[in-house]
Image (cartoon, rainbow, N blue to C red; front, side, top):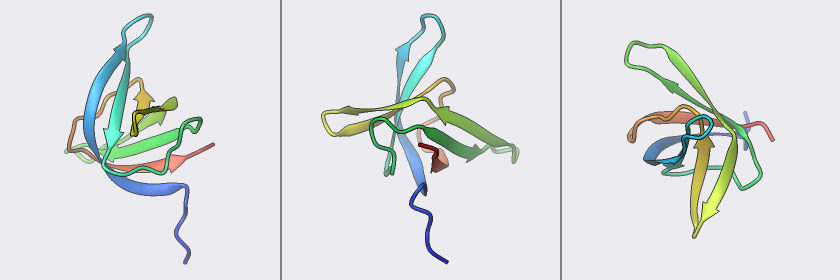
Length: 87
């Protein structure tokens, strides 16, 4: 079965607050990504209790070669995620 180029696994490596006005937005980096500037999608994680968490990726920024994923719900560094690109 061919691997889906719009889906990948990664680990959150860093997080920073982008803005609190009018709602909080965060930027997260991953150890690997298939997202590119202009793409959007979902990051999926599983909590310690087994609950599936979906975090929409609202936009993607390239900051001097570091790809930052803009989200409204931050995930902690070290969290395993599955990324799914929608567009």
